[in-house]
Length: 317
Image 1 (cartoon, one colour):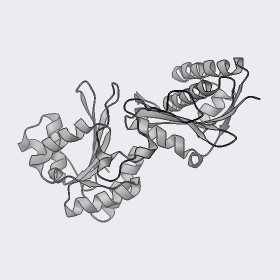
Image 2: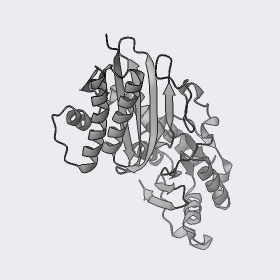
Image 3: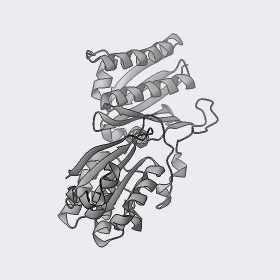
Image 4: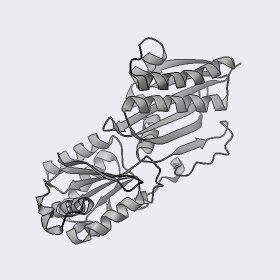
């Protein structure tokens, strides 16, 4: 009798198109045992491209576990499920190419005596794959095979993380390996108070779609209040870095954050946001006050491996 496997897959893009990544996992359908986990950053891509890449990774992992398995694919992307099931037409060229790639894996499973079917599920039922896709968007590559899965010895690839190794507060800001095509992302949040701090937290949550690996705050009273709201929204604790409390310390603090890699949210005073952004743009210090940084506003910057810097947005509320 063919082995029964369940693939759960997801993908996301922060900006759509923007910084994208996918996540996928394979379970034993009968026992629920986790057999494989995958995640990877995709650079700049659309949400639908990321969803398809998650599907391909999940199908490929299932095929590696048992080429002739009976596979149930569960995803919260109605588009991918309906297109792969043949009920919806595929009009976009990128989607068509990815669907053909996925179908190549499906045909290999069928040729070995297996089968594949698709089931749409609400996002709330796809949390594990969603968490992996956020790892991908944070610049992490995950390739974990568990006992009973494919034979890679259970060793994670360089740049991956293990669920058992999730760091406590403080260590959450450990370095993240950088990969070509994946930027370091920094979101500067101007400190605020009261409702403005709460609004800032909601804005960060909408922007990132998941918790960053690192949340820093300057240690000032307003920064601590704002960071507490942001941390509650994202489910992480803030780490105090006093260098973010003064404009003079901003360039050095900025370079440390970029060197760390991944995605970092920094809550600090307006003058420090201006100084950090001015440093990125190469502006003289006497012109930094021309940059807008309203209380509770967000400024987003991406730093690519080739040294290019992109200011994605400023003074967003």
